[in-house]
Amino acid sequence: DVQLVESGGGLVQPGGSLRLSCEASDFIFSAYAMHWVRQAPGKGLQYVSGISGNGRNIYYADSVRGRFIISRDNSKNTVFLQVSSLRPGDTALYYCVKDDYHDSSGQSYYNGLDVWGQGTSVTV
Amino acid sequence: QAVVTQEPSLTVSPGGTVTLTCGSSTGDVTSGHYPYWFQQKPGLAPRTLIYHTNNKHFWTPARFSGSLLGGKAALTLSGAQPEDEAEYYCLLSYPEGRVLFGGGTKLTVL
Image (cartoon, rainbow over all chains, first blue to last red; front, side, top):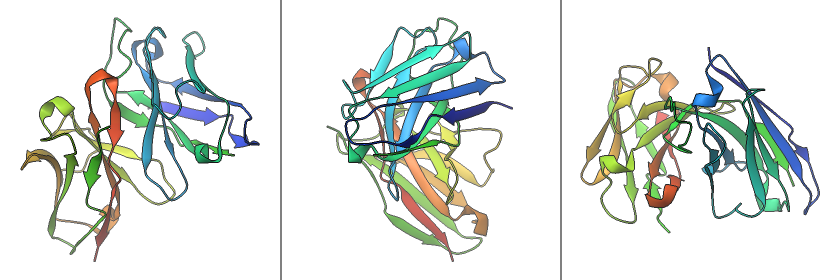
């Protein structure tokens, strides 16, 4: 079964930074875009960022562009989200999500959302 | 910026049928928005139920179906079970890669 395991969350002061990680297993990692979606306490879901399989194409939601950086290491089957200049409004559970399209070209940063991890909590 | 709208809450009787909808402030929802539906139970991660308007994953119970209805994406639950009580979110894709969730529908089976 596909597994996504997030880590790196924690309690941080406003203006601080964290590096979230998501280790994936049981699928050809480099052939799938990967995504981060967040959920503030008691609130709905917000799409944060996506990265193509080859790591060259990236999308950020307006609310995080310029503060968050998504990246991936295909040799380690891991996707990262560097979250910086954190604000209280960034407090949320951050989910790692696998794309649902096997993209042999590795170029597309979004096709759809498939399997979700359990999330890692960020409190600012 | 576009806003994706869902009913805040709905109630269905056990064994009954209910339809949840997903609208867009920019106009009719079409297959080109590639609608998705997700189910989230308290304390758990979301689970993808429906992709690209009406396609199911192998784990999606047969009683759930997706469609386009009256200019909106729709999720219909036929034969509701107590375990279907959850929050349901839709997701739409827009030009320039923008991806937006609806605010969610809290479904009560009562």
